[in-house]
Length: 107
Image 1 (cartoon, rainbow, N blue to C red):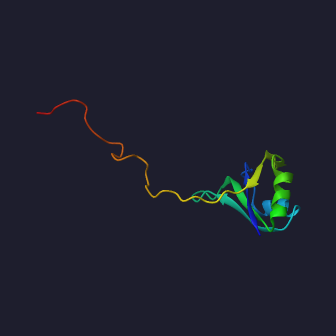
Image 2: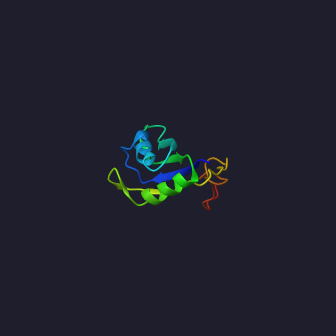
Image 3: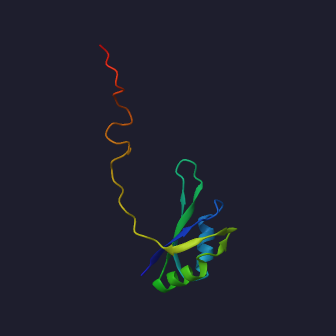
């Protein structure tokens, strides 16, 4: 069964092919995805590599975690499942940052 790995602290110059090439030396890579900023198209410095088997994933974590990759010390571990975000939207509370009082009475 395939296992997805989180790869963090990547150089902003990293491209998906760099990830695929590095991890394919340790086992079969199903996919390599670099997370990019939607507005700028620039890498956010992390990505995910899906390895074909649990054994390949374990080997990749052991071999790559804490190593230098494109002049950065990277973090590699098993990816956590994506969690649902709440749909509350702004997070400003119930008053929206405006509000009242002030102690004056306008009569």
